[in-house]
Length: 321
Image (cartoon, rainbow, N blue to C red; front, side, top):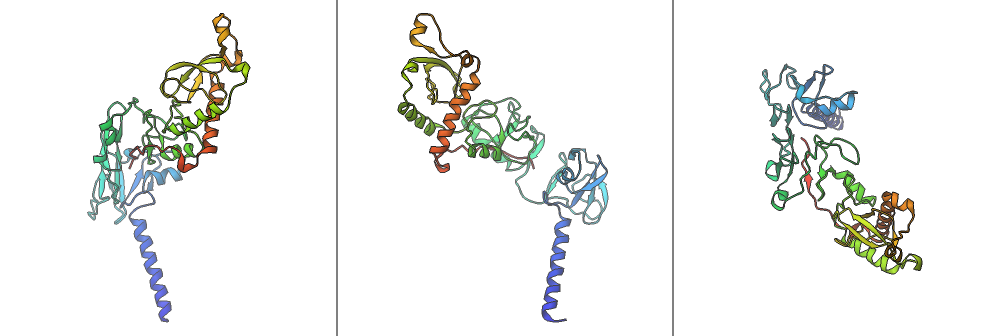
């Protein structure tokens, strides 16, 4: 055998050994030295994600009672170390969640959440009312509590949030959505919380732009004196303002994230006790909302580049381990 053939053979052997070693210590999701014996279908899987990707039902890892050591193939009860060869199944071990992992992700078990989180216990605290782990900076500056906020699905992708491995974003309103879903909403020009419609980022630049648009777009004389009552979705206050097709500005906080609560009326007609207006306008607040909000978003998209849009605060809930 030539020298080059020997090197190729040696390289293939090394590669094969690495693949065996990689296979032995885990899967694409976790590095561990144990397989689960899944009680739901009595099969062997490295983790619950491997199971869920290959089966038509979901697997609760807390229901596991048996493991198989990948070093010596010994089937045994759930424990931290193999009863036969003594190997530790994972450098991080939680026998409450049946979680084993050789990678350092700063895992910790949260009693309040009832699951293991990643990111470091020193960086998060458990809010009893929100019933979830939050960044410690929110403990110092305060946050808006929403009871059991994480015990729901993401309002964008409708996937579970509490047990998700995907980081979650926490807007000022306190509602949760997956961080990738939040970023996709911003790219699409949607800046309001899908749960409560409150602005999720600083919209000051856009409100200033809309001020200039309103000033540069006078209403026709026959509509110049019409007024309407609006509800602001940011400060939740009512105000009466002049009707304008570009947007309706809140008189309290200056936001254009508003909706009409009734029809518009002429000032003279109001003084004489005769209200005028389109009945369809007074019965459909959502129509006017989408019109003004749509105008705002379109203006934002066409005027501001991505680098010029207001930035959101990077407050994320720790994902599940």
